[in-house]
Length: 139
Ligand code: CMP
Image (cartoon, rainbow, N blue to C red; front, side):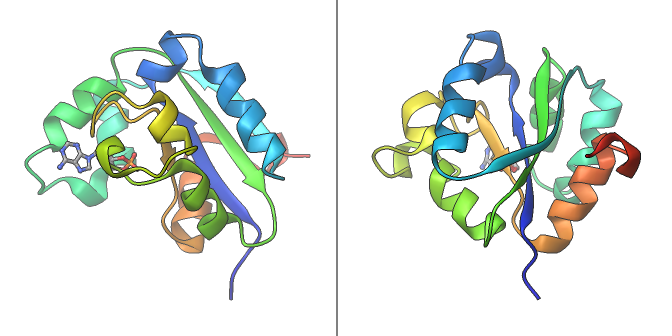
């Protein structure tokens, strides 16, 4: 059953370039409510844990290096049909394929430095949100 939450990170490229305000504005204007948010910095090891599902992929080491290269913002979002609607809002993983008006089309620099992460399923949204936040932190 679809839940109404998803999880996102504003990645080091977009956060470091001061784009988090503009990105959050787009997210809120699309109808998402912020449930929890924090700025943090991953170690390479912790980035590896977050992206463990990709550990056999050739880009895994580079992705972990990049994701630990600077601060990120981790956010739990709420909206009806959150996972699918958020993926539509952010656009394709490769910014070259991202639709006009999407967050990645506007702010991503490359496949790796693609501005934002978005959960790909309700199950992963819950796992990823729990990676950063304990339930008592949400309100
Ligand atoms: P994200 O949505 O955070 O999920 C996994 C990330 O791996 C993805 O965004 C990209 O940043 C990165 N990624 C996926 N495919 C590739 C690829 N072919 N080359 C480099 N990075 C990739």
